[in-house]
Length: 286
Image (tube, rainbow, N blue to C red; front, side, top):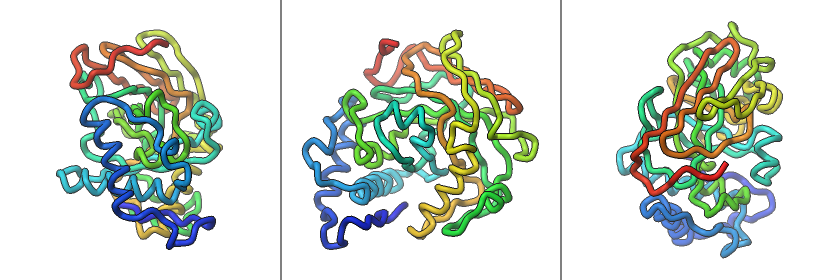
């Protein structure tokens, strides 16, 4: 679990205290439990920094692990210009992927989401440890055992997705769920930068994109992640899944919908949402 991220604009003594961190994490956790989104954190606490937000994220992950979840990887969020524009932020962030976030392809997803959206990504599955700082593209490529097509379900505990970078970081980078394809492909067999992607929502073409939308190449996002969390004492472990970011904008999804992403050279991945879910969310307006 990450330690607070260094913020050059704040002295250590100015960081929020443990009680405030726990209280804000509890506020987000309560949104999970009740199915009711919360107002943006920064509306009540405009002085919060990204450093504070990662401390809140850390507190949430600590609670999940204590409850039996296992950290199975990480995600890079907001790594494409399209997503940064859609979310109104100007930098990537990262979050944790835990065991309960993974859903099987073609099996009805009945997890408790609040206001889910879905986006296509390449999933890196690591075959060796990757530790920053100083990680290069060559280092990252050597650490990848294979890649899979993936669909990430992003979700926000912040009402109406009115997120700042502080809100989304505190909310575990707006993580919701992951569906992995089942056809592993060696990294040298595909050019991730030029790879095309088509996203279909309920049978209709919703968007197209390429791997270059993700920081120029998804590999660059993997490098960014390793070098960002490395100074915090965190390594990317063998077997971990890393989602580098979306190749298209995210699209709202609801019960009974099916989403398919086709990626040239990687194949397809399908997410199927159940008609009966464990949460109060319903099909949102497109």
